Image 1 (cartoon, rainbow, N blue to C red):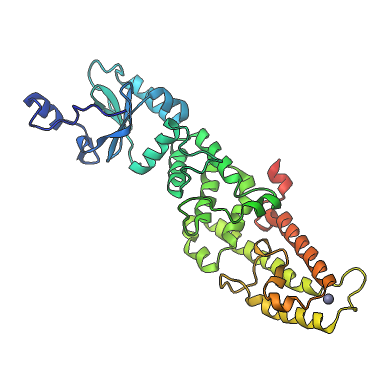
Image 2 (image 1 turned 60 degrees about the horizontal axis):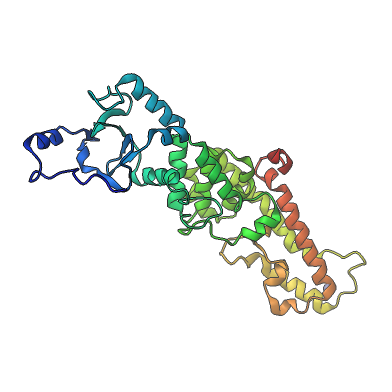
Amino acid sequence: MLPPSNRPRSASNASNDEVEEANKSPVLDGNPILLAKPHDELWYKDGNIVLATDVHLYKLHKGILANCSTVFRDMFDSLREEGDESGDSAPAVCSASCSEKWENVPLVKMVGDRDDDVYHFLMFFYKRSFFRAHQPSTRTFAVFSSLVTMGAKYDVGEIRSELVEFLVDFFPTTLDAFDKEKSSEIFSDTREGQAFWLLRAAKQFLNEPTLLPSLYYACASQPLWTIFSLSHLLDRHDVEIIIVGREKMLRYSHRVATALFHPYADGHLRCSSDCLNAKASILQAYPDSNSDSSWHPPFPLEIAIDGALAVNPDTSTNVCYSCNMNYRSSIKAIREMLWRDLPYIFQLGSWEELLN
Ligand SMILES: [Zn+2]
């Protein structure tokens, strides 16, 4: 719906009284509130509350906002207690952040909130398809970040549930689900180190422990310089968990390498010298094989099903069939072991404890 066309008016078509009235308009953070424009989209003629940022005014419905947020509900209750909300008489008495009126409709200043955050937050409630789990349309990091900020500040359970449902696809509790989604983009505007922002959101707002093992893993599998450069987003304890967990995960990476020489059940001695030489050559190259230039072999959850054999396909053709099959099953077992241990690695107990 469009905002009323008569507001704000210029001096050329408004009476002297109206100009005087406009000049007495409320002030938002030192600026006349008239500088904030009614929003093109979120302005409902039948709205009974105006939310104001330093950029926009949003004319909305108290019932809808109070229903989604206990903070709004308390705010509107205090408006009702402290002033006349009918809009027919004097302005409501100032409470914490509500003191003004816009065309006789109570106006609430969104103190300390960015206009973008307020817009994304309101769209979540007024446009049902705006940001929903399993729905790729508006899944941007910017919107997610706004919803976390506003959802936490205004205590909105519906946002919390939706964001958890959205993230469980990408930070699941089973290895199969992890493998299925690990190369999917979470947001259309991927942000470097976004795992750290997501972990912070999970710790501060989402309150869903089953997300944590794979979120910690996503942070711990980053290069060390990324971990240090984003460590300010987390508290010290979480950074310690990530670095210690990363150290523990390296043991599993070494197992991927040494598994090349695991004897198989019916004895290992029948291998040809070509096979032994190929495996030795692959083992030698493996520590330097990480494509992202990290100074360690790849973490097992990131590797191909043939592990170190993928490092040098030409040499790998000399590895005999029995060794190849034996190695692949070792890789599978190591990956499953790492997944099983993931909560322990990050000091979260067991999967069973997290899921109960
Ligand atoms: Zn062999």
